Length: 210
Image: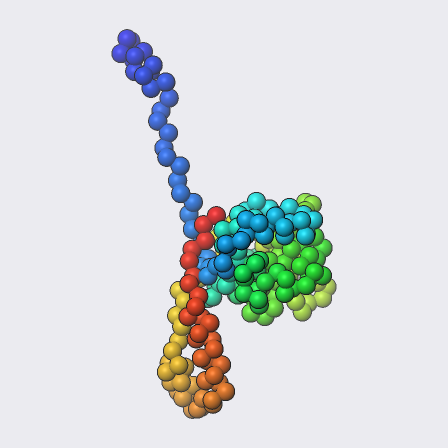
């Protein structure tokens, strides 16, 4: 009894706690935009929206500032789509910058458009009301324009995305592929290929950890 009492006093009567586990990366690979100024830009963005961003998404913007998501797809409920990019602030690529959306397109029905697929459909985040923080999908060409629910929060959406490693096909590979179809590449096509190769070669996808 004495030893038991002494042991209990020495350890405070509690079992040692396991160290906290590190957050697991999701299946999404993101080539982030420069987040250097996001500590100041995110609060300013919230003031502009006159709304607070959900904590998970605020953390994402501060850490990654959005980014391009090559070779990424998701299937959630009735929605199956690619994901081309998640929008950013400050030094984000102009094509995927919140400022390029225009004020009227950023917020729709209390939804913040936060990303897009190759067809111009949007990923949206609900900012207020019931289900705030949830992620939705908006087809750009369907009427009525209805937001389809995807996940309850932003982290849940990221977890449902899957990215394949990025392989940038060389000019020679593209020529061979077209010639296998019995066609010759034109100078105009090769110029477009070269532009795409330069752009994709500048991407550096990495796992996202919130």
